[in-house]
Amino acid sequence: MKEFWASMSGAWRRLRKDRAAMAGLVIVALLVIAALASLFIAPYRLVIAQDLRHALEPPSEQHWFGTDYVGRDVFLRILYGSRISLTVGIVVAGIGMTIGLVLGTTTGYLGGWWDAIVMRLTDIMLAFPFLLLAIAITAVLGPSLLNTILALGFASFPAYTRLVRGSVLTLREENYIEAARVSGASTARIMFRHLIPNLIGTLIVYGTLRISTAILAEAGLSYLGLGAQLPTPTWGNMLSDGRNYLLFYEWLPLFPGLAILITVAGFNLLGDGLRDAFDPKSR
Image 1 (cartoon, rainbow, N blue to C red):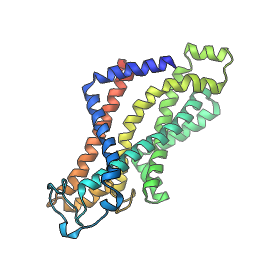
Image 2 (cartoon, rainbow, N blue to C red):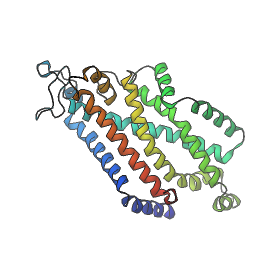
Image 3 (cartoon, one colour):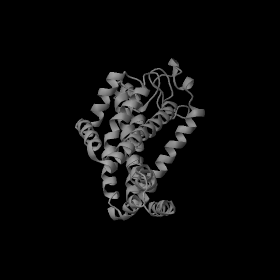
Image 4 (cartoon, rainbow, N blue to C red):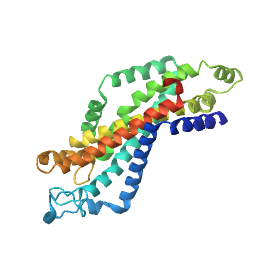
């Protein structure tokens, strides 16, 4: 355990020297602050309230990002959408990471028929594009935010499984694993005590990158009408609503599009920085 914390401390020192990664960390921190602030500034009743007298007003001191076609404040709706996007990204990454960690660790260490079955299933699922597989699952379950999260989480676990399995195949040949096996340590103890702690760094890096993928996929599903349903605001369905007003009321699709762009860029910068911090040889 001391080696684990020493590794984390060293990774943090290297991360602080990476300006791009720190810029990504700032963006992610601002997203978290915006999501928390939306609980108080942008409650649901306020972001769905219509005011037709002030419909399609351009950005101003009263409405920083303007208003939409029924007079709803775009800034407040983007704040509310940040809460949904962050929740989707974290939960989807958590689902995929949990399933992938269990399957990847057991298949990589145990091998045999279990490895063959899981890997063939993983290969079949990886043969489908991630977003297409999520669309198919969501179409079966029905359009809703919960079903979107479940679909994206299920569609993401094969990538985690393959990553973890590959790492475990390398780790199980290390001397300390062999020493634990010879000393009589049980399979469960070797997995939870020796293998999984050494996978944390890899999972943190990959999970951070996959959060941006999940946010982008959720926006795509919402744009297609398969995510959270109106009037609940998400960045994807705000883009879908705003596309009909692009020529004359450009702020409607502009601001949610920028929110997606900046958020995805932030997580990608942070993920790249974490990769270099945990594995300096990858530079």
